[in-house]
Length: 478
Ligand SMILES: C[S@@+](CC[C@H](N)C(=O)[O-])C[C@H]1O[C@@H](n2cnc3c(N)ncnc32)[C@H](O)[C@@H]1O
Image 1 (tube, rainbow, N blue to C red):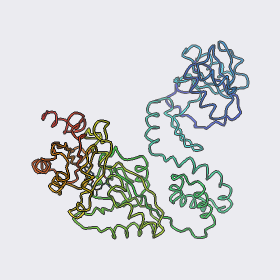
Image 2 (image 1 turned 180 degrees about the horizontal axis):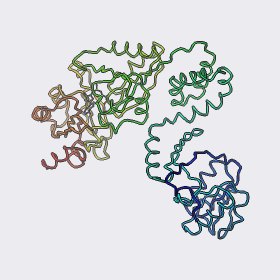
Image 3 (image 1 turned 90 degrees about the vertical axis):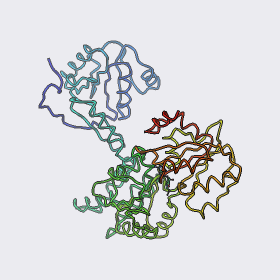
Image 4 (image 1 turned 90 degrees about the horizontal axis):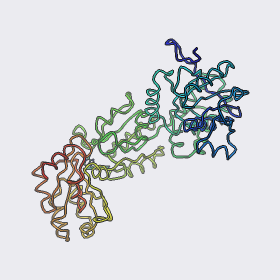
């Protein structure tokens, strides 16, 4: 005899979300699986009765707190009296089948955990952005596939969805009142979803978002609400993007990107987003900072969602501060998404801990952009012991760098690691002593982008390297 729904190839499940608040439900089983099911039912506000000879620790605790009722002993049919749903979660298929059969006779929906054949309802994989829930089911065909898909979607679905759904719930009446016509209402929502409300909710400003919604409700002609997100793309490996960066890339209308941002990262962005290369040396054109400012303004004022995508972190040698000041002056809404800066990423991928109890208690991020900027550095402080220097944009200045550090007392034997194309498949790590730095750079033809790490910790690269071909080169050298 078959009770479930999973036995017919042509069977399609009818998706429902059950309102269980204050309704009695039964969970049969007293172990960990039963506890997990009970937790989800309690979260939905159900009155849970747990039937089992004995209860696992969390169930016993809920019982002590008065949150569940315990039917002690072996399954009895009367446990089904008055309940709306049953979950059979014992590890004995005979008992589960008995529960399913009894529930079926009474036309009570039953789920037998991991047993589609015995179940008359399935529990989907859920992405929780309460009050918004996304449920995925494979109809019992491939539960692992549904779970895998849940993880993929989990990454893409903004956590601001929850507060947004709650806000819309609160303002639903007002929105209906203002836009009685369905298509006007749909337009209103579309404008709202394309606007700044996300940014406000992501920043935790629920009240500001609510005011924005109210303003949009009374505005007679909708004004385009473009914005700029200053986003750090990390050092190159697309796996080092933050979730927020990925989401913003998926929403962007326009992406203004630096030269250092690779194609693998741009490929992750919305297909139809307009991509504009504004790297200072992109296509050998010199795109001035003023031109970048003008582009941000032009697109944001046209109501577009602009992502200004920068290598590494936007606030580390990235002129992010200047861009924000410009946006603020021109009243363009903005947000900032940090990225993993080259120093952190290159150190990690080269096996160089930037601080170490035995060697370095501090790290300095330094730019060696040009001769003039080298003149302004505090060389005495930079030459101090027990610290790590992470030097950006220094490849063309290594002779000067070495000479000044030596002149200010840094030991000629101080180890360095010069990391070219850090975190990318073509990463190279050259190691040696400060005295030999310019010679080794020339010998290996190291080019930009490269980051120099100087200090005792750099010696650990040969021991701790784990990424890419450096490993093999270092092993050969050892
Ligand atoms: C204009 S700065 C931008 C820094 C960026 N905002 C950051 O936080 O990493 C460019 C310099 O960063 C360093 N850099 C950036 N990405 C790198 C990478 N993948 N490997 C090595 N160095 C990198 C190089 O020193 C390069 O010259």
